Length: 248
Ligand SMILES: NC(=O)c1ccc[n+]([C@@H]2O[C@H](COP(=O)([O-])OP(=O)(O)OC[C@H]3O[C@@H](n4cnc5c(N)ncnc54)[C@H](OP(=O)(O)O)[C@@H]3O)[C@@H](O)[C@H]2O)c1
Image (cartoon, rainbow, N blue to C red):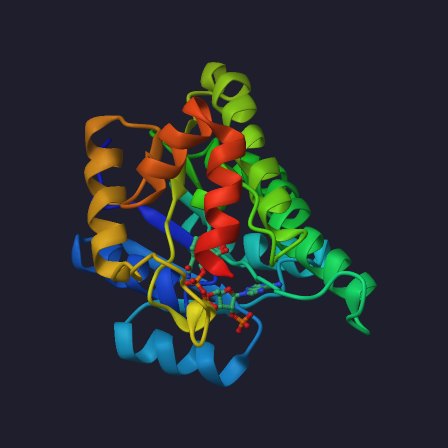
């Protein structure tokens, strides 16, 4: 697809993969809007990159609708919606004092919010000549990571939803892409035990996304996520055990 002159909304665009993507889309000649919850971080990132910003907690349908109303008023359409915002919690399921809250927060932000925002954005996307949606899931959509009991499941849900929506939204002319990053060098992965994996640079993840979108590849497993995909098909139990070994 053509990646210039688009109106692009990137949730979680103030840091990490989303910020690298925002900068790249901006430099390719697109109008970029980023959103996030932290006012100072968002304003700082938007002014550094020269992009627009809207404060929005994507787990609030009211805040999402208000953000879409602003985009509608300012631009009249949305060409690319990137669902990138996410959180990851590693915890001991049996002993953590906050297990119940962590389960709920992770599923709300990673799984429910991107789908509800996508649904709410359909009228604006339909105003575009070539609309597209990008879901950022994870290589962990292919295999469960034992340290994050709900995270892999939340990303697996997005993986399956992306596949379903690719089919359902085709008659509406909306393309659906999925980016599955491996462990990537961002604030989310700061201080994380990376096992035998080396963190991928966010710019290299975005290189693969852009290349995939331009060549019509819809499921973009970046870097080591390709091996996770292959092994999850070939030997899923072996892969899970290797992940346990690698991260313990
Ligand atoms: N880093 C990795 O190793 C890795 C690997 C695979 C997949 N991913 C996925 O890639 C995506 C980007 O993560 P990242 O690594 O770039 O981490 P990051 O730097 O922590 O970025 C996540 C962004 O999401 C925003 N966010 C979180 N909850 C939000 C909410 N409720 N509403 C709006 N914005 C929210 C955060 O901003 P605020 O806190 O200001 O809201 C933050 O800017 C995530 O979906 C993550 O699961 C990351």
